Length: 466
Picture (cartoon, rainbow, N blue to C red):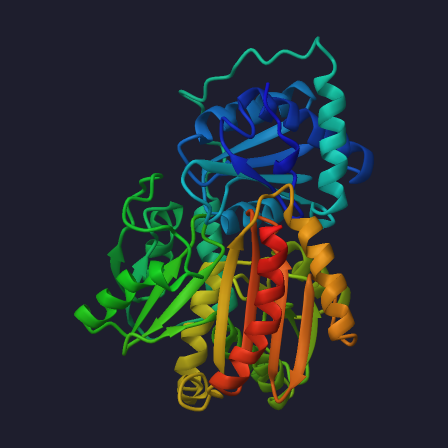
């Protein structure tokens, strides 16, 4: 039985399958999760209703069966969703009035990884809640009577029928009609390719599929639109076909990158600005939650069109929590997660983000200029330093202590974030999903950027080398 403590992260459970955890570990996880939920979430009925699905990774069959077995051995009523995108899992959770939603996924991580995203009646189960589940799991592992006998999913009946059609109907009710557009859709051989072409076609768009066949080894590129290297295939196809837009999705379908007709890749700041402008056109003065990694330029631009900006820790669960607390209608983060509270459930959904973006630029074509020629020309540095998971938080603690002496006004809500004025800013923070420390810096000139890099990156590299 394998259940390494490093898999219990800030907003999900994630690690290398068969090395950080195995099927027997997932069986115990199922039992631990339900023990926690029964204690804290107050299920509506005596038999806790659970919706379980996954994003089709190679390790999913064994983990799926083990997780379901653990849940059912604790008396749960499990609905098997099969292979779905994460947003479809969220949708089924809300529409089906479940007590718990579980998605087996490692999002954009390499093919050999897998994990689990958890949704309860009070929102995403994350942070200290995941640590409590870890403690329960370890207590169960000490009980030698717990044995996982195995559960084959061969021949399992998919009893989530109808949710995909209802999902499309919901999107249509939220977004409305759109003028047909020619769109390249790149799913990176991940699960979005099994659903999102149909979603976009249902709105009348012409879809050019790129790597939409499911191959969980991701042979063409990593399904991670945050990295420009992964989107170049989509950019090339847009230019080759004369498409109006390109959409590049991540491994489980909750993040998206956008490519314009001329091949320009919009970063998440610019996509969120378009979504904010669209939302504010219907809801003047409303709140938008942005994460710590989002730029000062974005915050200034949203305030400039009448929006109220709330800054949150990075991570979809933290943003969703902030949206609920502040009654915000929109949220987003630099990685490409966009959350919708306007006539929706408050969670991230890349298909809805795509449709909202297309509708926004159709209603107001000047938004394209706003995020291209009219966007301030800042110089940017972004890097992710590989640091062992067992060391990164201690390194960050030491780094923050050093930097607070230099920049006492810095924000430490998530790592350390420094605003220098004139929309110049920097952040250094530990990743909660991988063994990395992320750095992002923006300056008004190359000289200003280099000066900030010398101070901020130099100190970090010294600590990493120790």
